[in-house]
Length: 254
Image (cartoon, rainbow, N blue to C red; front, side, top):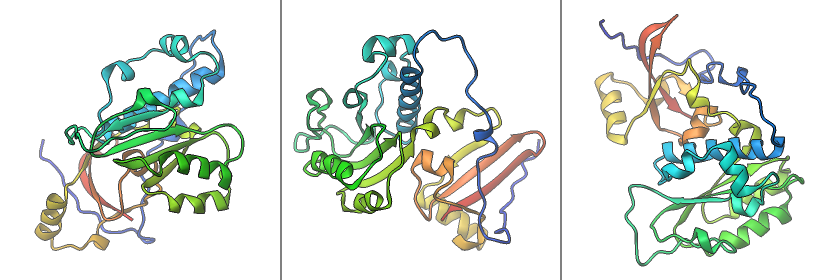
């Protein structure tokens, strides 16, 4: 079949979204005699691990394949939030003797690498400036930490959000409900490829385009957030299912 490729122009408002109905699908109902709280944390932590793996971090197969019953055996029905934390290095970065990534209070999570990311599960109480400052004190002296993800069980107030700008690394927040299902596993999900800087430049040059002439994808889009994409990056989207048939398009993150 001949491949159809289209360089879409921006829509009237210049922005597209790319959820493709993923959020309209609920978690399949399964027989489960355990507690709701432990299953909720299991699903959210599993999605977080998959998300980090897809971003290029070093996540073990053992962590990814952990079953709900194994999770409950290890973490209990009411998991300790400190133990749920995840700290992993980038796969592309070799171990470094001169750089240590140490999370205070979690000696088992000590790693030696150049770049790492930490996932912290927050409590059920509202997230305030005081709460954020406690996390800040734990990571401010961490060498090699370049990313922090806070999984929220409750709302974060305006002042707490502003406080995130004081961190020495990039901070992202995800409501725990957004991690109960991995949106990239949705059955209608097209193939997504993130272009390198060189691939983006080649694309724009071949079609005599500028960034703003590509369809735009908001930085807050669920797919963009899942992959941690930044403004200016371009993704290639390949559809191969009905009703659109085989179709390739590109979108720029704004």
